[in-house]
Length: 110
Image 1: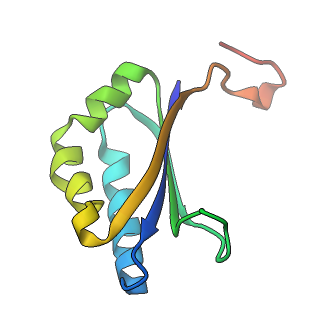
Image 2: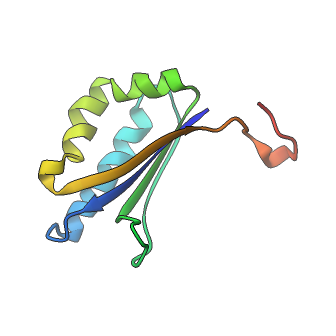
């Protein structure tokens, strides 16, 4: 599995309704991306140091699914413009492999 994490920062001049609009868009479009196994987005704590205003996590079955999603038309037509620097938004991003999954049974699996 591969997890993508984006910490989203908004220019202080942007109103809170813009934060909510971006959060709603990422929630809606995130579920529709090809290869997505799970997605979650939420507001960060008010005084988080370099924590941004939103944190978005998307889980993919594989790295190939990740690359398929970020090159998809949904990503290019909706997510890229919504998170554009020209709109006063910038991000810290990372993607990492998670070799273990479903630990709820008490056993680790690869």
